[in-house]
Length: 235
Ligand SMILES: Nc1ncnc2c1ncn2[C@@H]1O[C@H](COP(=O)(O)OP(=O)(O)O)[C@@H](O)[C@H]1O
Ligand SMILES: [Mg+2]
Image 1 (cartoon, rainbow, N blue to C red):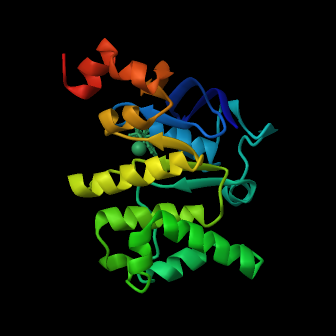
Image 2 (image 1 turned 60 degrees about the horizontal axis):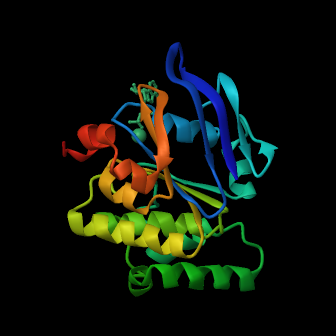
């Protein structure tokens, strides 16, 4: 579904990524883990056309999308929930979801999508009229994911959805991702919560200093010595 080949890029003269290749197949949950500053967000920005690749290519559904504009990618079915969530704080839950689905032309399709999204996140249904600004961190993250899902994306890309959340809210977010997985939604997940992430990921890539250092099945990585030492805090 998504293929990144030999990607190299950076900011002005500073190179951040070296020869990064990865892929995401239909219905997979693929994780990208690695230390702060390794370049995880830069990979996502390159996929989404926010950062221009210097070398290499990005393919989505068999088409070369290297350097394409973000709104075109959204139309093709790529949804990106950024680290900062990027909600409309002064709007209610329902207004945020309306904004998320504003390009849906048919009323019937819109209502169907809305029902589906609210069934995934019943808490949002209860809080339709609440302002996004007054919601808890976990609820805001749910809303950000729900808004992205209003476009029925083929691939949902999440950048550190559990960042800065309380343990209880982290649970809410991971439960939501598990639910999406059970619905066969394809997800690419960047996370610092390595243990939880490897538990739910079909496959994972480890990015260190801008290069892919390891790749494998989520469950295999949980038992890997390097992963245990570096990321799980157990020797
Ligand atoms: N807009 C930017 N301008 C210049 N350097 C940046 C910018 N964004 C990120 N960087 C640098 O690129 C490197 C990788 O950052 P990032 O992709 O955000 O890492 P991660 O998401 O893995 O924490 C870091 O050294 C960071 O300081
Ligand atoms: Mg990041």
